Each structure stands twice: as structure tokens, then as C-alpha cells.
Length: 524
Image (cartoon, rainbow, N blue to C red; front, top):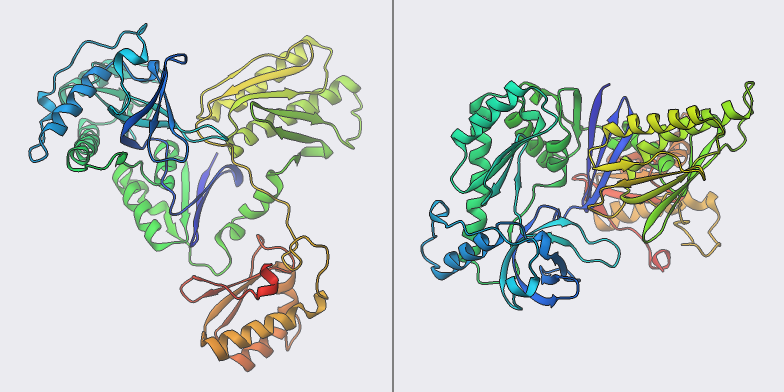
């Protein structure tokens, strides 16, 4: 299996697509100015205690206060609380972490009001983004994740990933980490650290320690509360940190700054693979070039078609996701209804495993497969689903089919499910149902070009239109495009874009900056 990452950086947002054998399996999209919330560390104040829930609400600067349960404070919360007081007591000289005192662990059967009070400062990390009407979920057990190691201040042990099976390698890694880890810190050794040399692990240990020291320095120097003291790396780097492996063949980026950032990171973690990071400079949008746009359009929405006319219907509710499997207009198998149902269900299991990763669906997922009478067929379907989900990095649990033919799946949820609206409103009428004659659309475009060149003074620009419209503009020996070139100059570039609706258009200058050419009546 080959893996490729395609990163589309636009003016206001960044999108990342993971392809396995050219098939889209993971997709993430976020505004460029938005911070990557999960993993961020704040020094904040307790706003309200909730004894009935044994929890509290903490103000971390979000619209809704964040939730912190007593059991999420972490066993070393008392040590953190004392160290924060020592750091805040002297704004000029930082109290060394190596001299920090480790206090007894927090009791598991304690209450929130015994430990916290309203207005108290706490150092917390976001573990779950705001979802629906809920604010962020917090933990008091801080961690700094790297590619090989996870550093946990005030931790007291070294743990090795259970996926490393060799007892000799586990012992080697434990002994090695004990020799290089800083005082008062615990470490989790990740699976990819297997076989790595001490120099590589020591280098990352120093990087993670520096992040913790920088965070504490911000706590000491800043008087503002809440205050972000550690920000998780950008989405592109965070995704690569967790996903990257030797099977990656290419990482394509269409922005020079992000390209340099990604290349620098890959050079640090895998110097021999630095050459796979490539700057895409083509005129066709990067997602169109790698067939990502078409896969996004066909993979999101309520109805998902897969092989031989069968399809899934995916519904989202506040508490769970419901998936219905339908055979559609599929012709019956020669081997009868049972074989037909098994074939449709196995195909649904393949597509559903991909959909869970692609949409990042979490919580409870209930799947209504087509009824099967044979116990061995139901077991085969269960095993197929378990095998497909092995590629999923999120923690999950799958139950065998119930007597009603339902499969229940739970999957770790740390951020809202990705939902891309694949339906297109008419860009001309904005859903009113009345549009100008489409034959006049190119006349409208020419007026925009005339205004842009002769009134605004932009001589070189890129006009993005639907591929059908682009084909019409380019058709013929003396095409409409050629006429425009002679009339308005040779700086006009027509770019077909699959993400645009039929009568939609976008103008960009030579630097890729969006030019708003909408008329007032178009934006009403």
C-alpha cells in the first residue's frame, strides 16, 4: 500500500488529504487563523464548582467554559498546584523545575471542593474540542507529544507501547529512557521508537523538555488569565507526526511557507525521506490535479454509493450516528438472497471503515446491515469490520451483530465530525430559483474582466470557473479566450476548478490573493 499526503493551502483555510492507493481515507479542513485546540495548554482560573458532578468549569477563553472532572485532574495535581504557586511568587527568577517538590498523589475518591476553589489558577490541557453545545474537555495531567516519545511532567514512570512485542527491545528502551529523562518527568515510549538509537531519542527528549520549560516561562511572565502557554503544532505537522511512516511516497504542498515548514519537520524525523516533500506549482487546483475534489464530492453527504448499486445512508444525531445499508438496484446473486446479502454487507463494511476515518465520526455508531440467517456469515462480517478498522488510529470498540442485525461501534471522539456540504446553491440566484439567462454568463465575465483590466488596473490574473464553462471558453480555433487575450492583454489565465458550481466564478491575482468582483445584486 502506498500513501500520499496532499496539502491545499488557501488564503483563509488549509485542507489536508491522506490518500492510500489513490483513495481518499482522511480529510481535515480548518481556517488558517484558527488554533489547533486539542493539545493546547492554558493557565486559567476556576470559574464555577459543580459538587453534584464532582467537576468544575474553567475559563480558557472560549465562548463556553471548559469542563474539568475531578478524575481528570491527574494523580499529580497537588504537585502542579504547588509548583504554579512557586513560579508565580517570583516574576523575575524562574523557580527551577528540577527542584520542584513532588507531593502525594491525589486521592481517587476525593471531591472537587476539597482540591479547588473559585478563582484558583490551574494549568490545564485540552483533550477534546468543543462539540455541539459542549465546551472543551480538559485534563490536569499534561503531556507533550513527539514522534517517538511523550513527556509527562511530574510523572514517575517510563511506559513502553504495548505494540512493541519484543521483551529485549522493551527492556532496552526502558533502560535507555531512564538514563536520559529529566528529573520529575515520566515518559511514554511510542511504537515508532522501536529500534531507534539513543541520539535520536535524546534529541527529541531535549525538544520536549524545552517546550515544557517555555510553557512555564510564559506562566511566570504573563499576568493575563486565561493565557495560552503552549500551542500544539499546526494541523499539517500534527497529522504527519502521527501518520508518517516509511510507506509515504509523496507529500505535495501548494504553498512555499508550509512546504518549508513540512520539509523542515520531515528532515528532522526522517532525513532520508526529505525528498518526498514536493512543492506543487501547477495552474490546476492541487485537489483537482490529484482527484481529491471529486472524491470529496462523492464521499460526503447523506447517501454514499459503493459497488454494484448498493449504498449507505448516514444520519447524524446529537448522541450517535446511524448507518443504514441498502442493496439498491443491485441484481440478485445467482447463489440466492443469503449470498447477495453477505456480498452487500461486506462491501458496506469496507466503505464504512473508510467513512469513519474520513469524517472522523466519533461516539456511538449503530449500523443496520441487511439481515443474514447464517451465523457463520454474521461472524465473517464482524471479522471483516474488525480487520478494516485496524488501520484506524482512534480508539474504538466493535460488538458482533445483535439478534436484530445491528452492529454497535464506539469510536474515540476528540473533535466534531467532519461534514462537507456537497449540495450546491445556485451562485447566481442564491436559492431563489430565478437566474439570468446562462447564455449571457460569458458576457458577464467579460464585463468583469474589462472592469478589472481597464478600471482597477490588474493586468495579470487567474479566472477560476467550472470545467464545463472553461471548456466552452477554450473551444474552437479562435476561442473566446483568444479574443479576450487580444482585447485585454495576455495576462488572462482560465483555470477549470471542480469545486465551483456551474455558473460560479472566482478571480485571483498573480500572487494567489482572492479578488472580490461580485456585484451588489449578486451578494443579496
